Length: 226
Image (cartoon, rainbow, N blue to C red; front, side, top):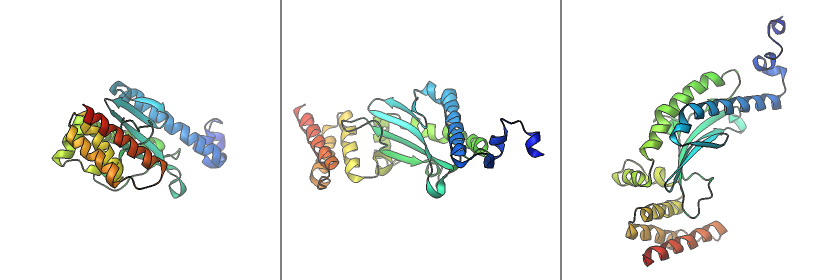
């Protein structure tokens, strides 16, 4: 009887067991992407964000990329997603994808990690709360740090930790600090941090570590030639 009371097109949406698991996940993902697009159109596009990747609104500022990632869960977190609020520095090694300094939305609100449902029957309700967090917490945080000078000021004032400002890996933190200080024409500080990369954090034989070391050398040479 229940099926007879429900329009045929609505039956799969209200009855997840009427479709197979792959179809259900596809529909769930599509609905979440639609919600993100609606949020982007209503609030983020006017602030300079682009939606070139379906789950990652991002904007480019002077020497800086900022964004919000709607990260899908896997394994026991399948059917959920988290919010990552991030920025990356647009130096010579920035490939346009990585996220240097990342904060989970739960940590930004002073609480535990938060995951949100992307199940069809609860996605709408959860996304209302997600939208409030984006507008009330994530965006103010990004606006507060929407330039390299503001990030450095917060770091030097002690209101932003080195990890929160420049990333989790210590070698990359020094590279990012060198880039930021060089952008602000603070040559001595920039050379100091690039030297830290070269002398202390380039022992790994991996190609990326050696590439970072050479880039740090290049920055030092350019700064000394000024």
